[in-house]
Image (tube, rainbow, N blue to C red; front, side, top):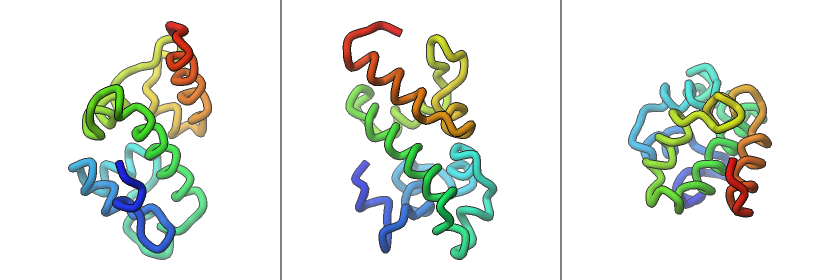
Length: 115
């Protein structure tokens, strides 16, 4: 996922993220743990919390995309595969403000340590 393809004017654009991942803005909001209004109302899209959640989600999807061969498969993994040792998905960890745990898990995998 190219960052320029999912951003405009220095902000992540929910419509472009949804288009890239072939889904809806409402699903992106749910995936990021945000209310739909946060991604629909232009005044709220630039909110730091909104942008942080989108950034965390995009960072993780971009990081694992090469492992799966596509952004769509990485997005499916992000939403549906529980991480060993956490029993929750990366999506749930990001929604709970724990994106650091997902990165830690990926760091261990990158180092060859099986989780």
